[in-house]
Amino acid sequence: RIMTTEKDSSTLLAEGLLQHYEPDLKKIKQQLSRLSSKHSEVLKEVEKENMKFAAMNANELNSMFIMIKEYHQRLLNVKKEMNILSERSTRLKKRALKLQEHKQKEALENAHYREAQLKREENLIAKSDPNFKVS
Image (cartoon, rainbow, N blue to C red; front, side, top):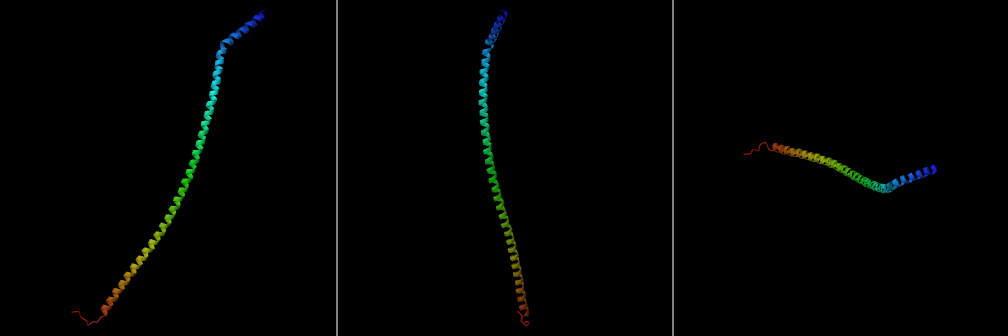
């Protein structure tokens, strides 16, 4: 009988402990379950946001690369235009120099021609009749 009493006592003790702690443990179990589900929800939301940012970053990067490509093309066009303008400028400078040389040559020829004309006139005047006197 002592054995049964001990078994009964231990059963009663276990039941008492269980009754005492079971409501708190059930409450904690429910709280942990809710916390776990909330954690899962938050984790899913964070993953969604990360995906959004990743997609947004990918879109931004794509648009940035497109802009870089456009600006590079613009730069190449500007360089090409500058080279064309530089070549034109060089040709115009050469042409202006040739024209200037031509004008100087013409001016020199005209000066020589006038000088020759003056000498010829002087020679004609000098060769005129020596007996002729102006009164």
